[in-house]
Image 1: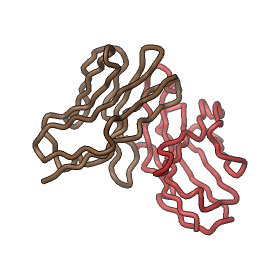
Image 2 (image 1 turned 180 degrees about the horizontal axis):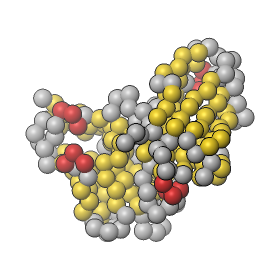
Image 3 (image 1 turned 90 degrees about the horizontal axis):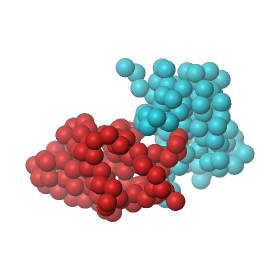
Image 4 (image 1 turned 90 degrees about the vertical axis):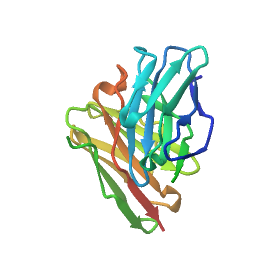
Length: 111
Length: 116
């Protein structure tokens, strides 16, 4: 069975400090994985995608994620948080046309 | 470039009324998806169209829900009659090539529906 687990429902960081949002997946074949961000009252915006090319994927707004097959992980990181990064983040597994969503991690950024 | 456009952004109506949500996908995208987002259940896929044809409607809750895609640039999701438990945010998304070939889906800003 395919699934996605986001390990933290909330993460709180101070502005200017690193961000780490954790995601583990389960898939019987080589997965395609995405990270999306959702700001209040907005739709989901694609941050980055992994499709079996490079294991370190760079996305928009300074975010990046590393695909680790041995750990079945796809954690999202950013070196320095901005106030504008406060939002909900979804790790997503692409299963043909169906997207399998993690439960989301709400990122809080303290001034 | 224009993204996925949904209307209305907000809808408040009384139970029993018919509700119609509208979506214009990104030009050139031939796959369209309707999702529902609630606090309790997160994001759920309701229906998937490819080249205007419904491919998977297994997520449609019940017969009160129906969706159409009369052409490549327009889709509707209709609820008749509406019930308070239908209150949610409804998203439309589109993608090129049916999301096969690892093409991501692009989401609209959603319709926030409240049924009183």
